[in-house]
Image (cartoon, rainbow, N blue to C red; front, side, top):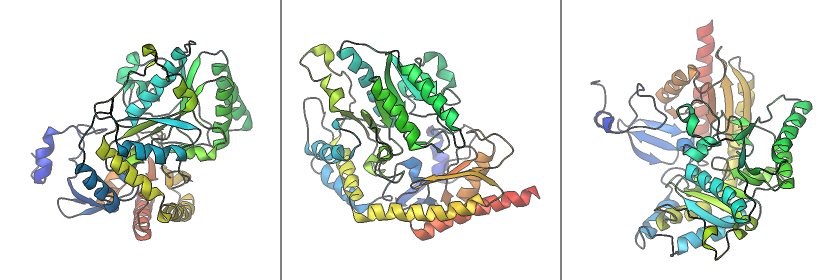
Length: 435
């Protein structure tokens, strides 16, 4: 055993970590998290510049959320949600539904983003079953990511993450996302392809990450292209499922990414930032039109789906507290501040010889590091970049050679400047190594 391991690292042999190769370096033990910082067992701090996988909105251990959880635990632990209800669920839904794009009527709670996607897919297919006109086809974007359960994998990119399961995934029709630099002819060709897929009346749903495809490498695409697709989907009564798991709660600038489009979804899927990064929670919001197909005393029209911890009152108390924080003036002020700071740094990056495809949307800033290899999740630069950033006290988790910043809104200007400086240091070192 490596004698340089800390006591917690030595004991961690019992855990299997996500998205982590068995030969990876030992995980860093975190003993405390506060604000934008994570603190390890050796006293070193790390700026959490990716919001701990995009979940943290307001900073770690925010007192407003901590107090709400403490008060909730004095009244509830878990209460089953079949046949029962409670004020945290009602209060949260009453506050969230009016903020969502489109005419959302009901929220269905689950455990995380993947399960919320499963709920959306099952509701879409059962909707057409319930109205007596079954449809089976699902349409999705190539290079998409919607989670790791089987339905979520089926509607995502068929590649590295899903290769062992190809034979078990259901059939999906995929179309390309419009790319930066694509011509108007290419755009029209994609729109025509999509119309051909939906015009035969067999498509139940179109699922998409609005404006930004996260795990694909923070690929950003124009809202007007999405708007055209949604209009075509509406024309042929195809259910529009917006996966706002990553883009929701201000990440792209507005509260939800669908504020960029005139056409609105029929179903919105939420998770990640929904509790401010405190607890796991998924929510699937549906329009009145969708719910009406289930609003029946007929037993076979019931949505037979649920999770043991559906609508846990303590978790929803945290979600409500986080939502309350989004209504404070500093929420919008911080988003605007981060956007302005990102824009300035993006100009620096565009002039650097080691970068290409610098892009930003709201509080998300991304760049591709030139490497001589194709931009991909398995690009060999990934590990060296990650280790470099960690050694400088910054948590950035590159998607291959794509480096992105997606910080908690509480991040200070000084912390942002350190993140930027560490990225520039890494890029400058690469230039020196090439000489």
